[in-house]
Image (cartoon, rainbow, N blue to C red):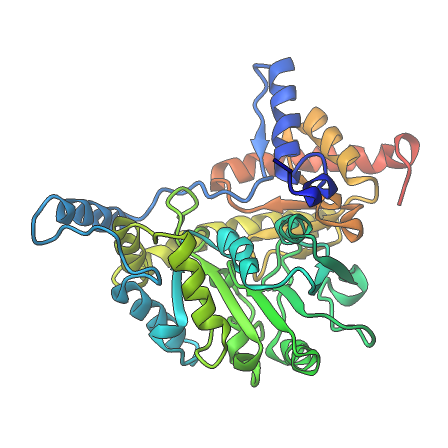
Amino acid sequence: MKINRYMKNLEENYLFAEVAKRVEAYKTAFPNADVISLGIGDVTQPLPLKIVDAGKDACNDLGTRIGFHGYGPYEGYPFLRNAVVDYYKRIKVDIDADEVFITDGAKNGIGNILDLFDVDNTVLIPDPVYPAYVDANVMGGRKIVYVDATAENGFLAMPPKRGHADIIYICSPNNPTGAAYTTEQLKAWVDFALDNEAVILYDAAYESFIGSKDAAHSIFQVTGARDCAIELCSFSKMAGFTGVRCGWTVIPMASPLNRLWLKRQAIKFNGTSYVVQKMAERALRGGIEDVQKTVEIYKKNAKTVTAKFDALKIRYTGGVDAPYVWFYCGIDSWEFFDYLLKKARIVCTPGSGFGKNGNGWVRFTAFNTPERTADALARFEPFWKEFIDVREKLFKLL
């Protein structure tokens, strides 16, 4: 037996596992401490009752001879695939049901889609970035090159003027920075992909949070994208399915990857459960208004954070098109994480965990409850004022 030799190239601890480890250590040392998390991007609002009822109805179906379902289609049930097609129509994007594949979440889809690609591909990834993009390719032994997303370009990296890439990752609205591309900006990426005969893996997991009128909701709003892009999306954040698990992948029929992905799914995936798919269908049909109400709760949390940051004159991005607020702390991100936890009992996510360009920055999530978000910011204000006073004395500035 030989272990995958590329596993040794992974970081010792995955970002969010390290965050959990440090928080648990603090809680063990101070068991009575009231810690508020604005760190991990997990939802807190309960599922809308219409979606829960759809799950109950689906379970009842399975208890009848007529309504029983065993193995489902590898690509997903038609009722959900057609609901996804209709969901895209609201932004005037036409896709076919045969181009939609139901998965158990965008994260799994992003990792599993790499089965279609040879190890001899160069992968281009913006920095900072969701670490799963990097780790999935490190495990596969692919060469990774980075393009810088910084405060100077609004954390929206644009195609490099030189160099080649075969696989391109784009997350918009972005995790962790909250920045979102316009269709005009995405056109530059589509043109770059076409020139390089590359594929864009477009992560649209936070599409439902877009608040600005110019931000793109889908890569397929861009001319030429159908010739070079795959779009992955999720019910996790839009409908609160982090514990339910469901998402979708769109691969145009003209691409040979469409049939290859179906073959891959048939070999390694038995499909998302009937019950979950019925719940997802209800999220798009009949329950979409309730879903949007829940999204609005998180968007208001983000506005609460940004309003406080405006008052404190903190430099930040995000909060308008994504449930994340990305702000500048000016010192090593992990040092700030530990100091914030110790002094204010607030959990953040260190920006350096998303790449070298993230160091000195920190991510807050809007996914806590409104009450706990307000409590966290009430603690944060005096903490920040004290932190600014002692930052130059206690820490090395970046």
